[in-house]
Length: 437
Image (cartoon, rainbow, N blue to C red; front, side):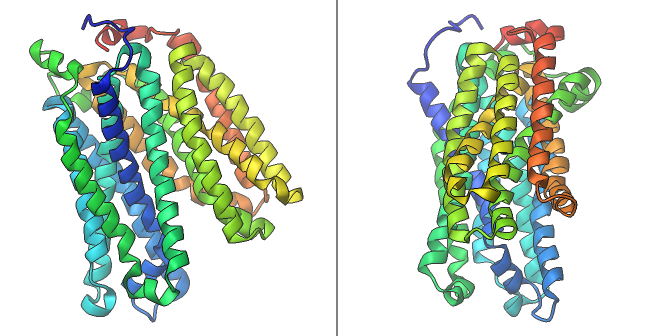
C-alpha cells in the first residue's frame, strides 16, 4: 500500500481505535468481574456442605478454565481472521463474550438446579475465555492495519490502555456494589448486576462495530490473492519460530506484570502489612489509572524511538519503581499512593508489546502468529504466575518484588535483542512484510 505512512490519524482512525478499545475494555471487564465476586459465586454455585478451601479451589479452577480456553478460541478465530477477514472475527469475539456474561448473570444457582449450576458456570467461563483469546490479538491486528505506519505504537498502546480501563471498570463496579448493597442483598441477586451490565454493554459494542471497515491490509491481500495457502498456523510454527518465541516472552511480561502489580498486590498489602482493604483498593485504582497513561506513553515511545529503546528504558524504570514500592510500603505506609502510582505507570511498558508482535509477522499469517503466541503464553504464564508468587511468599515476603525484577530483566534482555534483530523499522528476515503495513 503506497498511502502516506506519515499521515496523521483521521476521523475513521479515531472511530476504529475507540470502538476497538471499547470492546477490549468490555472484554476485560467481563473477564475480571468474576474475580471480584468469586466468593459469593462460590457459595451460590457449590453445595453448602463443601469445605471452604475446596469451594475456593473450585471457584478459582473455574476462573483458570477461562485462561485455558484462550488458546483454543484464539487460534480458531485467528485462523478465520487470516482467511475470511479481520472484521467478521472482530464482531464475533465480542458477541461470544457478551452472551456468556449475560448468561452468568441469569444462571440459576445450585439451590435451584443442583450440579447443573456449576457445570453451566464452567461452560460460560470457557466461552468467555475463548472469546477473549480471539478479541485481544484481533484488536491489535485490526487497529495496526488501519492506522498509518508511524502510528502503530500509539494505536497498540491505546488498545492495551483500553484493556486496563476494563480492569478499572470492574473494580469500580465491584466497589459500588459492595458499598451500596448489604452482603445479604448481594447474595440474593446483587451479584448478578455486574454480569448483566457487562453483557448488555457488550451487545451495544457489538452493534457499534458494524460501522468498522475491513482493514486496508486484508482487503489488499484479498485483491492480490496473497492469503495464506496452507493452514496459517502451520506456516507460523514452521517459519516463524523466533518471532513466536519473542512474542511469547513479551506476553509473559505483559500478563505477569499486570497480574502481580495490579491484581495480586492489593491482597498482598492487606495480608503482609495489614493495610486496610479500602486503602489498598484506592491505591490500586490510582495505580490502574497510571497504568493507562503508562501504556499510552510506551506506545508513543515505540513510534518515536523504536521498540528496542522503549523496552530497555521501560524495563529499567519498572525495576527501579517496583523495588522502591515493595521496599518502602513496609516502612512508610504514607508513601503507598505515590509509590503505587509510580509502579503502575512503569508497568505501562507492556503497552509496547503488541507493537513488536504486529511487526513480527507478515499480514497473511499475522493474526494466527500473534494469537498463537499470545494465547499460549497467556495460558501458561497468566495461569501460573499467581501460584508461583504465592509459593515464593513462603520463602520471602518480598516475593512479588523479586518476580517483577525478574520480569524487568526479561524486558531488558528483549529490548537489547530487538535492537540487534529488529533494528528500528526492519524485521530481519521479512523486510517485505512491513511494506504492507
